[in-house]
Image: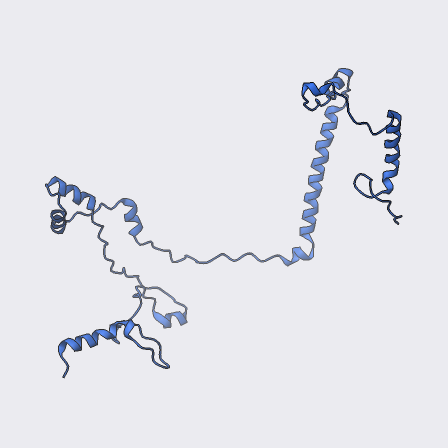
Amino acid sequence: MTSPAVATRYEDSYDNPLLFKSELGRPFQRGFTLPSQEFTYGRPNITKDGGAADAVSGWPHYTAIQNAPRKDKQPERDFVALNKACVGAGLVTAQEQFEYRATHDVRRRVSDEEKNKNKMKRIPASMTFGVSTRPSTPVFDLLEHKYQDRWLQERRKSEMSKREKVQQKQNLNKGIYETRASLLRKHCPPVDQPPLWQMPKFQKQGPHLETFRSPEAREAAFTHHGSDCTARTGVFGHGVYEGAKN
């Protein structure tokens, strides 16, 4: 015969999922205690619409909707006010404040916004849920190319408006001639870029190396290179000669 302590321990093991062992061909148990067979799951249906009989016959009428019994939610405790009252009563230790909060109760004030949120919103009977259906595309407009004609008309209107603007500008400028003063006012004289900075002691020094015998030879060499570089490869025309291209 087993002792009561062992029996209690054995019964508690059915609620511990860690002690369960998986059985072949059966779902794994979680150890939850389910209610009896008479228990009905789900939320109660407060609307009495007649059931399946009225649904088959087209729902000719609706009965009155009964208000579901709704419990008013009690506001939360106001610990700030409780702590303030504890200090006012001369209680400063943690144990004294715990005992004071156990014997006294102060609730937070519910604002108007929270009251409105808790109210049940009544949906009208003619309310339709979901996304509205897009209107069907007119087939006759597609067959008659109305969309194409409309686009061509819009393009024609835009081109005409642009031409009118150009014509207005030409009419405004008509009869106005440019004078020497207006041309000089618009002219910007070219400005030479300043030379690169150089130390004063090197400004009057000439080049120490001259690879050409004379300025005429230098000019002739550059002229020959300008006419000969077109047939050579490379960016600056210093490479080998290229073959003829079709």
